[in-house]
Image (cartoon, rainbow, N blue to C red; front, side, top):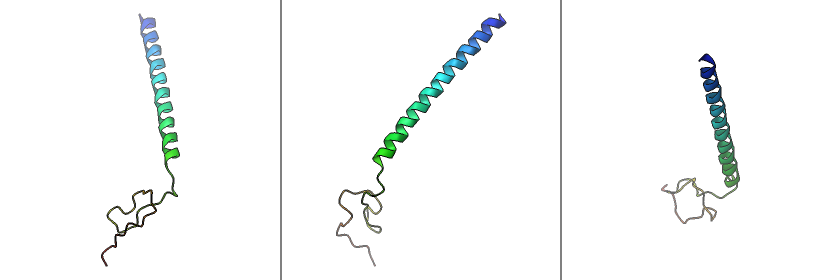
Length: 68
């Protein structure tokens, strides 16, 4: 009886370790994908504009002038 319970606990522990390993792999993949997409040199809209600080594909000259 006790051996059956120990076997069950051992099996549950193995399953938990496998699940944790799967989560670690998924997190590494997400981190890698994020690092590839992030480019600190990509132009951003100028501060003071409605879209200020957001990534842009043009370099930021929007013709908008911030109120003085």
